[in-house]
Length: 470
Image 1: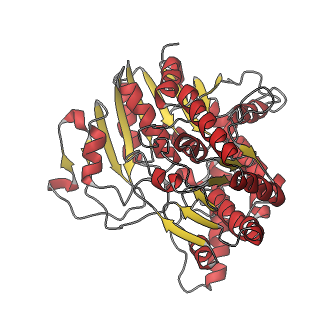
Image 2: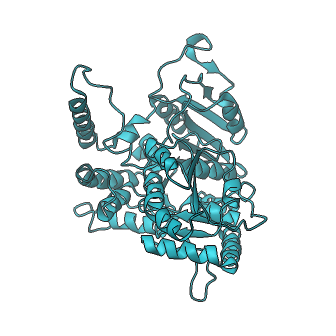
Image 3: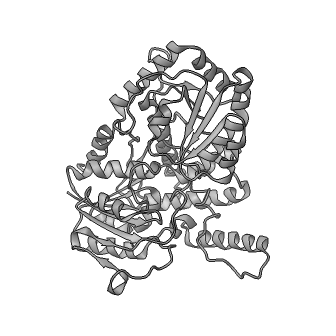
């Protein structure tokens, strides 16, 4: 089968963030059985060697410049460096050296805060400029029905390329790796080939959750966005043959949105089947630890410019750790993850906290910690960070959000992680692990066993592959 994969996030190396990890491992599995044609966008920190490495994984690769990257001096006549047709088109690297994680949660940079429109008149007061910019972006969302973060990452060149492939009958199926890529799929494609949206999680559900839990950074903005996101998600879902989410919670949210009650007056509206396919772990990248380090060391890992992770890091550092340090004066916390924003960097000035940013191998830091804490308060979907800690053998204490989609045991089932949501619950759970070597060992072994039996990328890849056999 010829499968066209569309990903505005450049999916290599597979250690940059959740979207890259999932996309790369799924395309790698599908490439063993199908001819995969990948269209993607080059973010500023992508190197030529990374493009070359990614090209080895697929039959055909086309890489397009990020639409917000300034034009670069041409490397060859016409501004493009042309390769053989099966290798796609490569563009010269942009000047910028760094960029935040490409797709933060929909209402962090993806809500009305995104940088889609150019600066307004520089003579206007800065505050007024920001207000007018927000109104401008919101009006665009209201008028177009598409969120600013989707528009800001849209490449017309990639659209033209995908249109030509489909029109020429060069693919049997199209898959969008993350909901932002739905913009490239034409509604009429569903009538002649399989179209799959691997959405990761519901943007409407995430917005509603932040409002319900009081974790929204801008409640007024998000209340205005909520019905627009509902309309947007309902519309794009109808374009696809199948939808893929990572947890049953995400599936239930979408079913609620697409239920007959939610679609009153739309009797002929197409509701696609919704499959649940979780994330996986590369066991070679996250080997099981050789020793239990003991001590009173904590770790939290994740992209540190991502709103849910920023919230979790601050919650852990400012509310949980100080109470724990009242019991254990030597208790420490290491925050690991790319692109830490100022709010996260500031946490490194507090007693016992180290902010290390991006590292070569997260597993090495996990192996050095007695406990991994995943205190997520917002954000749906199965968490790579939780699976990776479990694979590495580091005992996990996590919230309902941090453990979403995972059977962590209790009752007749072996316990694979400890659950906590309130500050004192975290303190008691972490204390029990600090004090009980046997409990740490039990959680470590049980969690690794769960990952090996249900969450390797080979297992997840087989589930994804079955969608293309229907």
